[in-house]
Amino acid sequence: MNKYLDDHRETFNTKLSQLLPAQHNHASNLHSAMRYSMLNGGKRIRPLLCIAAADAISENNSATFSVAAAIEMMHVYSLIHDDLPSMDNDDLRRGKPTCHVKFNEATAILAGDALQALAFETIADISSLTYQNHIRLVKILAANIGCSGMVKGQAIDLDCSATNLNQEQLDEMHNCKTGALIEASIIMGAITTQKMSDAQEESLKIFAKKIGLAFQIQDDILDVESSTEEMGKSRGSDVSNKKSTYTSLLGLSKSKERASSLYKESIDALEVFEHKADPLRVLANFIISRTY
Image 1 (cartoon, rainbow, N blue to C red):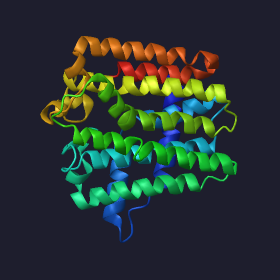
Image 2 (cartoon, rainbow, N blue to C red):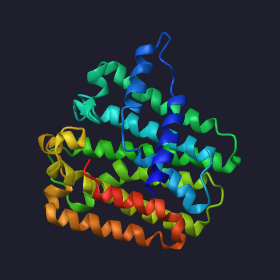
Image 3 (cartoon, helix red, strand yellow):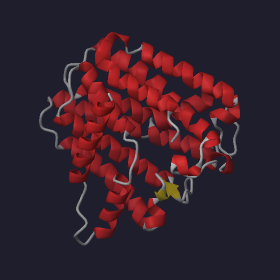
Image 4 (cartoon, rainbow, N blue to C red):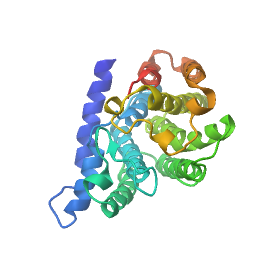
């Protein structure tokens, strides 16, 4: 299974590098910033979830890898903008200077904008899908990153700094900010097979919602327990920014219990896929047991 993940990660990184613009033209600073942020390490969890979801239905294909690349572009765009001085004001990402620190704030904003556009262009260039599935991919990605998904979650996060949220409010924020793109990764990957049934889609949505929330709880746990060196980003930034977290609301022990419970529920949702969902199971286990 580790070889499965390593091989797909390597293939994915090669495709990603090919899709990104070269650095030898008049916009070299912009393009360098895009490549720096995209190829600067990263766990590639969302692309791997995309590929694994396709394999749970049938098998991945070239369209799957294009969609996986588009999703990672969206993810990195969100990280670049999240790190900006006007947002979380972070200086470190993946163990290296954030995009606005390495280049400058204006270039970082443009790099994020360009990656969002390139994500949709990458999906538009897929030629192997039916019209209905092609349009569905665009709609799902737009809905999950926009004003009812990731951006909504980011807005709630900014608006509610220094506010004590309850668990329902915290769940809503992170279902949007973190969970929406994870769900898009999984469902869009499955769509690329063009063989997903309604029942399979429902099971994958349950899996995605459960593991997406578990992902965020584990992030909050790591912000308390891990080190800046291990995480590759500033430890304790949520506390310094006066943000509500699961650990501040529930405490460390109960946060771990909830993450574990959500993980078990996510695994239960995969029963219908039998062994074909083993890569998804391994990724789910990594999500709640990771130390970075």
